[in-house]
Length: 405
Ligand code: NAD
Image (cartoon, rainbow, N blue to C red; front, side, top):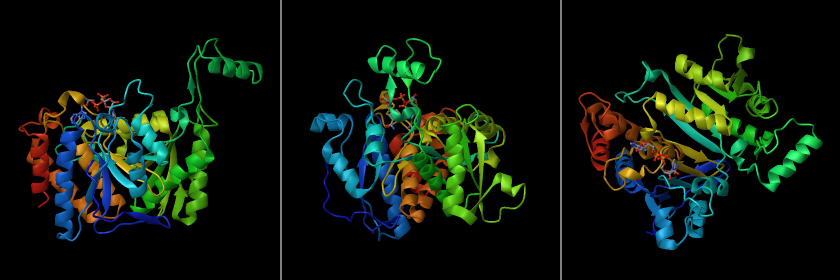
């Protein structure tokens, strides 16, 4: 592990980060293709910071171990030292990690989310000119999805059909609550709380206000699951009213009028949102969803604008955040200098925006747009783009740096 004693930690006070000119930012390189991607991404990040600040700011990267590298070097998939460092420095970026099979840890990503209570999974989805996409007008989709990250059927409260826990729960449900249940059913629980729902929706609304986005849509399946998904919708509207009073207005209150600079809060049933985002994408901006809906919706949206290879993401809590691409380790391309680093690079854009370094973020986006326009792109985009030249991961990063201007 490269331990740096230089640099200054990012701190957090009264709901805001205090970011020095030389922040220490921990990174997890990631397994498989993570090595190639991190090398390329760091190059693009450092170039953008140097250029945006005229050399007055720099990131002091601090490697922390997780995944296969940690297991090889430290004998643990997620060493205690990594958890301490991530907690101390608050904002970090990571590559994809292999989910160890049968290693006694369900998922490294889930463990990190739980440690820092990273309750919002944030996925911006937009199209970059030149990226091959399956729809006619991919430019019409420009949304940011806020997915609740700690509750719902993903909470991990699940029992196999043959377990004694499932048998006991079936007994209670049938005898005490008169539930109709097939014998030998497996049981999964879907917990959704007022606290968890409201803080997620509040974060989505705050983002919409900060970034001057027109609307926040609460996505739910409340017509069927009234007390969980339906409650998510109701709590969402309550959060808008209680915490953002005059700065939001509901679609019903607006009745087709002019919202002015207020954020419009509306809701849609989950299945209809999948259609709407394909058919009328321009009507949607920020989306707030429970965990399961959000998981499906984020990948569908990413595919609509050109695939998962360049889809960025973040897991955000109060005063803590870990930025990461949506894709996995793509092990068959490991160490071939072949894979697209766009997902991690655009996750870095989100990280710099989160830290208030908007100038750095804008420069990376400019470089990325230029690189795509140049058609000197990695294999995944090259094979679908007419007249494209396939370049390596590292050459694509060089192209991004060159296109920063
Ligand atoms: P994957 O995302 O690694 O691969 C799916 C497909 O997309 C493959 O064809 C791959 O070649 C392609 N692909 C992925 N990233 C790409 C990129 N940057 N550029 C071009 N093409 C790309 O998903 P998988 O195969 O289901 O999972 C492999 C491993 O990754 C598993 O161990 C899984 O648990 C892990 N995983 C980790 C994360 C994470 O750390 N956040 C997320 C998903 C999967």
